Image 1 (cartoon, rainbow, N blue to C red):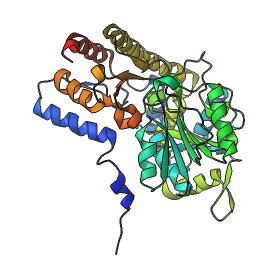
Image 2: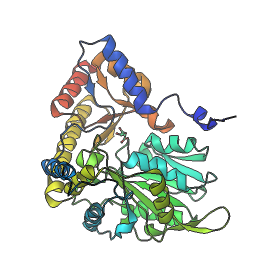
Image 3: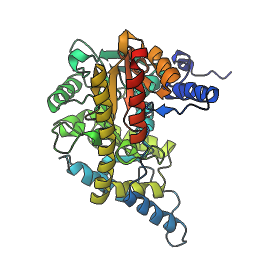
Image 4: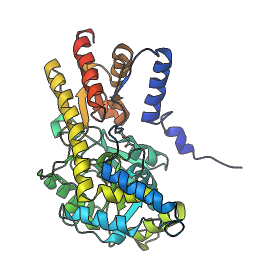
Length: 402
Ligand code: MLT
């Protein structure tokens, strides 16, 4: 008899953003005349940078010629992209070995897939609120999950509590959804905790490019001494270079990182991840990797940064209107997200329904990111300027009806 994975029965009916997409599609079908302003899922709207498009076009041409055609590539990515990532990390003071970099189809996949190389006996520690993939993928494995509370009093940045014993800690900085980013001192505390407990930090840096270049806030956990002994970092071209539809990311697994299996055998996580990826993954398309390489070139970085400035300006505009309305909010400065308090003590999903039905605006209910997100709401700055302004104007004009 075939048994299914009963842990799936412990999950919410559908994934947060799939659930929202369904509700929005139903609303649009019932009200085809309404123009919906989408400030829900963090999906980019600006086109790929010109230098990325040129690199991809060149790669397409190569694929069309017998002499330059390529079939399967290395599962862990091409050397040219490893070199580009190494150079990128050097710009914020981190030295990597190319063998430590694994190119993938995005941070979401890696955040979920990395669960493969850890025992299900591990206790997981998650910030709350946080990106729901960390919770859901560990629920799927039946693992014990503990939560650390993010609240205004700790700037939504929980720091280690020695009374909590956990084996795997997920950190997302700048945080999705709150936009809060850990300082170097706070990350040092996490590294010290991980070392003391022989734990591993899974560090999601998907939003690091939203930290300004002259800001001392760490863009990588590896800027902290000793992190190479206790951390794995995941990052993505999705938000940095507008690759949400193009799909490319990378995971950094230090060569010296090792832990014991339950039978006592010491194993290197880099080798395990290589084994996992070469077995279950066939790599990212050559064309996409050439585009990602171009995004990390000096010209590509400048073009991508211009897009990020545009999204951050959207956040500034949103913040200005929320200020005028007297609504408390966080984020938007080192992140593309505004994390606002729901007005009049409303619950997150109630505010979602109200915004959708009255104003035809889509956002993301804070409770979808964890119980501490209840009463909060996330708006994204990834929309077009016109939509952002229109959405916020709608809110401003109709706010007395909320
Ligand atoms: C989000 O809206 O939180 C993100 O776009 C989801 C993702 O990156 O998978």
